[in-house]
Amino acid sequence: MIRKMKSTAIAGICLAAALLLPGCAGMPVQNQGEPEPVQNPEEPGPPPVTAEDSQAPTEASAPAEASQATAEAARVYAVGPYGRISVELPEDWEAEPYAADSEWSVPGLYGMRLHPESENTGYIDLNYTQMFGVCGTGLSQETVTLAGEEASVGTYDNHEMWDFISFRGAFDHITVQSVMAEEWPEADRETVMGILDTLKYEPDVAEGAAAYFVSDSEIPEIGLIAEARDITATGAVIRFRVWDPELSSGELQYGDDYKLERLEQGSWTPVPVVFDGEWGINDIAYLIPKEGSPDDDDPTNDSGISEWKVDWEWLYGPLTPGDYRIEKTVTDFRGTGDYDMYPVRACFHYAGEGD
Image (cartoon, rainbow, N blue to C red; front, top):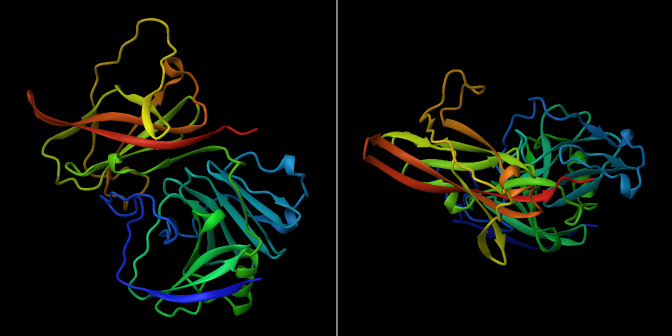
């Protein structure tokens, strides 16, 4: 049952979504959000799961990987580092799940895309997101109750279909976005609300890892952002991205040195070293290009990107669930004795590898 409670108009507010705008220094924002679409729905993604694919698994046989969704009767799942999301799906609908590191997501976001089997364009993006932003111009919001929790339904410029839904309370950080679904038949648009009314969120059923953005993840003086990807218990890939090539005055460089810290009772503390013996760091400099190369997989990407792979198991051992950050130093090198050094930190939440 969907129960409208009140309607409000929001204007003049604009909050930055993490890493969606170059150089943003956003912090977690609650209950105001619409993540931007991150990929054309016609591009290839995970195989769809329909209610007809259900093998009626028991609770113990629910999905074990964040990149997959399965069905229990008509219920489909998406699992990630902050918990499991599920809804009941009609037989003629499909679910396409995506993981926190997929091309369909920004750091800290994972979930599933929902659409009728008969619709080749448009989808409903149901996800867990760390950060998101909305601009208030032309936006109206109303508060409803869905799946027993309050949610804000946002609509821009009097669209016939809402643009986003942001949950509160026990479903905080769960958001829904309507992408190119404006022309769907009214019956399909009404079905969406019925599906969302079956939403379940289980924060204790979590696995995998997700990066998240903090102000220390960016060096505004040289227009650079760092983030962690492909995170496991034993290593990760740190990606450096230049969003403004005009800000640095020399070559951007980094080495193999790093610090690994864990968040303990609100404070960042060094992860204890388990290696017993002498060790050192290679004295090497890696260059960060200031602009994209014509050989990049995405020819429209004009950002300079460099990736550094780290294996910390030999030094720190495998990680246990928690929040971590890797600190690296980036140098703006103009010449011998003429350079500036900047620390940058890539943060991530690790929930474990699952069963």
